[in-house]
Image (tube, rainbow, N blue to C red; front, side, top):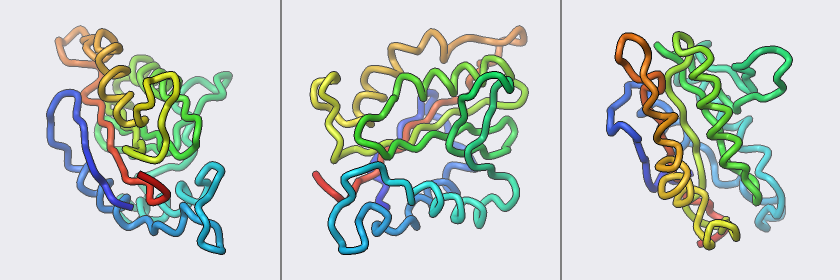
Length: 181
């Protein structure tokens, strides 16, 4: 999988980011295609399992898949959790109708509820292939970085009592979907 862009809300460097990018770049493009090499017309379900195996190689036992960061009665989960200090909550967009607003809110809400456990958010989204009708035919990556992140900056900029940001940083990683332009 090819990484095209990385957006950091706070313009910071992170030790875990290079490991995450390395794992993403090792995901084989075959996960986007049927066995007969035709492009998948449905959600790319194999992406999470391939990425999980690669993340385990990078982070060992410090990564969890289908992680529920919120209270038990809440059924929301994120695709991955990396237990850095503080933790990274990650969503991977792989369907034709991504729910970007919900994914962003899940991550922000989790960080605000437990800022000592979670501090970083990350959405991995295609820079091509999917064009969002309700977002002016922009890609999920463009919609996140150009609309949703700026719109939610008041939530991203909430500070703790000690003056530090609750959300240490929010990243959007844009990948090239090999099925289209």
